[in-house]
Length: 239
Image (tube, rainbow, N blue to C red):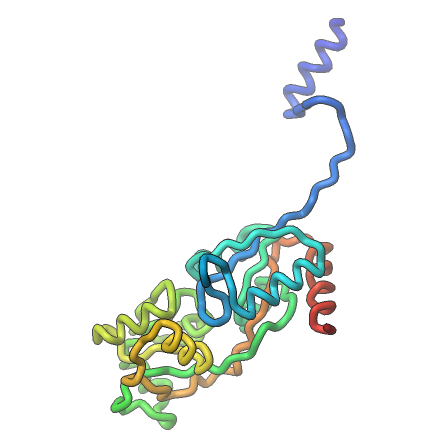
């Protein structure tokens, strides 16, 4: 009896916990998926997260037989979660040289070109130099690929926002001069939100490669999980 009591005491000191009978434990992997509300890639419609990027992610994870739940967050927060937490999938994220080694990339969703939009009578044009653009007030989503590109080229006059649609409001209030957008989402947002975007036009194509949007797993994700998701992606792409 004394021996048994001594063993229990030592186990308690070591942090061991016991509840009922001992059985082999099989953990069902449930990953966290993070994204932002960005029409038409991923967005809420009738209380449900929709968009072709969301559909693709769901198809891939279903094909990989992985349980998941999706959290819609401001982009900067979603980005930080995917940077520092294990087994997190993020979409739609641009694969840039700065991010290449920060994530475990699964597969491409779509490639987009980005333009700076501004007033139709703006003096900004395709011949404007990058240095000349620095005098203008530009609205950007914090930690977005465009933000990182402009910040990396020493742009100081940046106004950071949580969501891209906030830039439209800032422009209407004359608080910014330019805002980055790709033509697909810009036109779709104007139509979806019934916004009057007639006073804006694409003025300048940013000198960066077509941004390829991906789904990616956090660098701290288990390699076996990564390969399973990649296999799911390949399976969906073959269909």
